[in-house]
Image 1 (cartoon, rainbow, N blue to C red):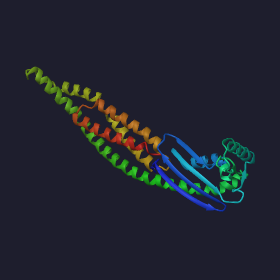
Image 2: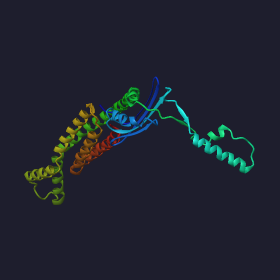
Image 3: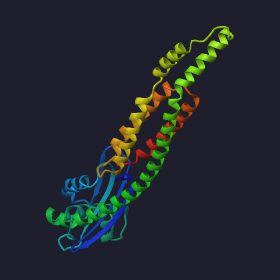
Image 4: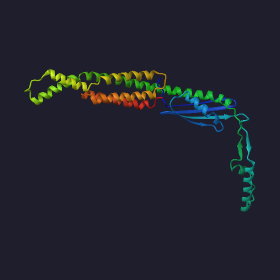
Length: 293
């Protein structure tokens, strides 16, 4: 099954005392590349989350935000940094005195310095938090994969259409290649007649022999057989459940190699034009395959 590497998903789960929000985007990448942003204080879950993603996604850049909100009493405790508050208050008092200002120092002026009220880092049970995060993460990745499969199905339709066009053109090339020996024979006869002005009797056996030698040098039957095999492999990979992006990219390189060889051997202009048309389709396939997982 073809999967696209481009998708987006967002989900939220509430299970007291936690509210979990997961937002995930995926993009093209040669390898699996996970960029995780996690709520401060829950860094102990980072490896679990990345491992969980790796079990669900084979390739692509995954940008994921996991927000964990603890609404329990233990998760909402604060303390005052009294030494900092006193030091800042004393500085404000000294400044008022130096400037001759009689206005009293208010609490909000002290709090404005920042760092006075701080959250208390309560000890967290990693297993307990993970039990809440995992279902939300699972839903988000499932939605992501659904979108990747939908986009992949669209890509597969495009691939099938182009493969059919390539297959049809390959048959044209095969038919045209079968005409090459007669074409070489005709060219030899015409050239000899032009050089001798019809004054020399043409040895048909020798002409046939020379035409056969020229045709053998430009024989592309092996390349045609391999190209047909590549088409079958391409279709099989599209139907396989395993990630297909890398093997398809490799197979496309082999495709290009076969048609490049055909182009260097072909002896007919019409065949050359067909090969150019095939290579154009292969280039379009190459561009699309970069988005396949």
